[in-house]
Amino acid sequence: MNTQDILVVGAGVIGCSVAFHLAKLGAARVTVIDRGQIGSGTTAQSSGLLRTHYSVPENVALARASWAVFTNFADYLGDEEASAGVVACGYLAAASAGDRAVALQTVLERQQSMGIEARVIDRQEAAERLPIARFDDAALIGFEPEAGFADAWMVASGFARVARRLGVRFLEGVAAEGLLREGNRVVGVRTSRGELHAGTVISTQNIWACEIERWTGIRIPLVAERHRVLALQGPEAYTQQMPVFKDLLSAHMLYCRSYGGVQMLVGDGISGERLAEPDNQPGEISMDDVVAIGEAVADRFPSYSQAELASSWTGVYDVTPDWNPVLEASSDLPGLVMAFGFSGHGFKLSPAIGKLLAQTALGLPTEHRLQPYSLERFRGGRLLTGLYGAGAVS
Image (cartoon, rainbow, N blue to C red):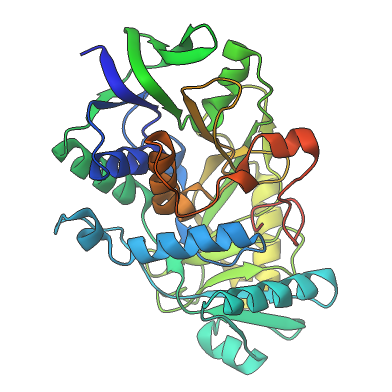
């Protein structure tokens, strides 16, 4: 039981997706370990947004493939009880004149060139779709109907349930403490419950991927950032028929969506509180921060100047210098496949990335290219920085 073909470290939504796809592709003796429980870490903190709106073309392709899975989740898993909790309300983004409007126009054109239904809309249509917001200062507004939000924990648990049914073993409460090596090759993981040997180790450790640097000396360009999320109760309901909104006009680059069919869930898309060590425990949100975000919301949603704070929490991003992930079979350490630095994109891309990593680990042809997401890009200065600059839009 302590020797397996493939060992996955991390049972968040990415790790569970990897496990499912490994099993579907015929992998035998697959084990997943997690220091906590399935989907209990940063996955449980996700705001669950789904979109193909990216300025990095590789992200668009992964997001489009993932959207097809989310909206057909039960059939894809072969489990009639599975649900991703998708609310397909669309995604609306508005930008002021200047660089952000140019970026938004470019993104919409790229989406269209890839066969995605995305288009420029006028202020009147925007107001009809999101009547609680104002758009008088928007120079450009874009809309994509095949977008919305879903439930990250439901997705992770759905992947895990079917993976178990297909023979994958999950060990919860088991922390990785080091890599086992024979020469330069990774042959397993030292855990809090002893050694687990494997032909291939797939690290989906999220913010804890920085431990790889301590274990191996390989530079892992990753920081953990805590981001704030508020649920606001306003005098006008933010219904589930209203689209997810990206406010590219605001300094905070706010995202907003319906929460519970009435409230507004709102968070920011800029750098958050940098943590000295990995920690996904809930953090405090200061009243100054609540006021700052509340003022930005009220500027876009006038009636929300009278909103009340219904609840708040924090979520932690694993952030790379260009706010895009590293996905690779390590050239420095054969036997190790790494996936980290999702920078807020992990849930959106999780089905496609899970399949991509499973194909890589099994030596199969991949449906999407790994090369743009290599660790080498940071060493060579070939960053995947999006047109909007550093931040969670990419």
